[in-house]
Every structure is written in structure tokens, then in C-alpha cells.
Image (cartoon, rainbow, N blue to C red; front, side):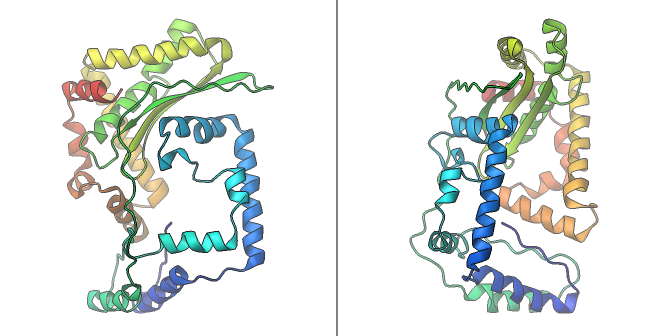
Amino acid sequence: MALYAETLPWEIPIIIRIIFEAVINDKYDREEFAETKEEILSEIKTYIDHPSEHLFDHLFMPTVFEGTPLEKPIVGSLKTVAGITMRKLLAARQKIFIPNKPMIIVVVGKFDEKELIEEIGKTFGTIPPKNGVMPPPLVSLENKKIRKLEEKQGISQAYLNLGFRTPALSHKDSLKIGLLSIILGEGFSCRLARELRSKTGAGGYDIDSNYDSLGGIGCFYIYITLGQQRLKEAEEIIVAQFCDLKENLVGKAELEKAQNLLLRKRNFLLRHYYGDKKGLDGQALRLVMHEFEGIPLDVVQDFDYHVRRISAQSLRQAARKYL
């Protein structure tokens, strides 16, 4: 959860107090609570009816992270959300908004540092620490070979997710995992797209490869949509490409192309999600996200350098470790 405000320098103390009041407020309107609950239940029903959303949130992630907190969809299920009461909401809130949980305050722009620290101390600094709070559970990188199938009537396509637990964005291998993701499934000329066209003649398919960080651990996965009769072939092609990346070096041209695409992708995401790189709001959000993810500052500042220095040999080593 994040709270954001844009204000004039001399109004910063007022804004801090307003945000503080929002954090410590433990009173909710019952009518608003009931309406919001119904809206969430309606959204969950929509997810269930959408094959790709249902596949990822309710089949793939619970399977990859079985036995961990990450197996539970963030949006919840019809059963869990329907069972939320005002009392349960307030109890959960008390566990979240406490000082010994990660609570990060970022201010960028023109401000008086001394005044700012004093105001934070008079507000957030007054929240008494809670004892006995368990640290977040550690999720191991161990992967198990699990296959889960679900048949649905009235759907003409097959939807496939195939992936693994991986290190998070803060890990030294994260950029290599990102490059492997691009080589396999990013763009019309990626390896998987080429192989599907040449070996199956399949058309009308969607391919995507993603590497996400989930707070202390990552997830790398391939997503493909295609005709049901091609599902087994597609899976074999994916596994064959994993094996190739583990055995053979990526060519110089393919590596440079992936590096260029990763740099363009990052710059696009920075502009799209965080605004202009010089914008104060963008800088504030980036600092918060990097702090939560534990990404080293030198990687953030010298991203191009760290991407360019990845060699074909180190990429093969990463493939052997994580694919």
C-alpha cells in the first residue's frame, strides 16, 4: 500500500499530519465497507471468467508457491472476501500499520530537512512499537515439477503458464534472468515465436515471457495461448529452448539485441509508470520501490553498464541455475 501527495514546500508538515491520520485511523463507515466488499466480489467473479487471469492467479501462482503465503491470490477468493467482517479488517490493519513492519517515507524536491524529520518524529514516531510480530516467512528457491490441468467448456484455446521460483530483483543474477526472459519470449522474433512458427506452423497464438519480483523472491514464467491440439508441442519447444540455453552460448548479435530491448523496456516502464525521469513524483516512487526491493543503488544509477557487461558465458550459467 502506498500513499502519495504533491504539495508546496511550506505545506509539507500539514500533509505529513494528514497522511499520519489516514494511517492511524481505525474507523470505517459500515455502508462504504459493504459497498467496497461487493465491488471486490464482483471483480473476482470477472477474473474467474477470464481464462488467462484465472490461469495465472488461481492455478499457476498457487502451484508454483504452494505452501507459502504467495500461493494466495492478492485479490482473495470469493470465500475469503465474503468472510471479511469489520472486526477482521481492523485486526488485520493493526498488523500492517506498525513501525516494525517496513514503513518507508520518501520526500523529494524542496524542503527543510530538519523541520521534516521533526514532523515525522511528532507523528509517525509516536506510534508505539508492537512486540511479538513475526518476520515475513522466507520462501525457498526450491522448485518442484508439478503439472496442473483444468478443463473448461466453451473455450476454443489452450492457455499455458510454465515457470519457476527465482531470486528477486535485488539478486546479482536478476539482470541475467531478465535477459533470458527477453531472449525466450519477448517480441515477434523471440526464440519461442520462431520455433512455434517453424516447427508447428501454428498461427493465432500469443507468447509472453515475464520475470516478476514479489518481495524477497522472484518468479520467471512463459505464457502461451494457442490451439488445444498444439499444447503438447508448445511445451516441448519451451523445454527444448531451456535446454539449449543451458548447453550453448547465446550468439553475440542475439545477446546485444536482448540487451538493447531490456534497456528500452526499462526506459519505457520508467516513463509509463513513474513519469518523466526528471519528475519529482517519478523519483519518489522509484526510491520507494527500490528500497522495498532492496535493489543496490549502483545498479539503479548505472543500469546500462550492468546490463552491457553481462556475457554469454554468465548468461549460460544463469540458465543452468534457474531454468
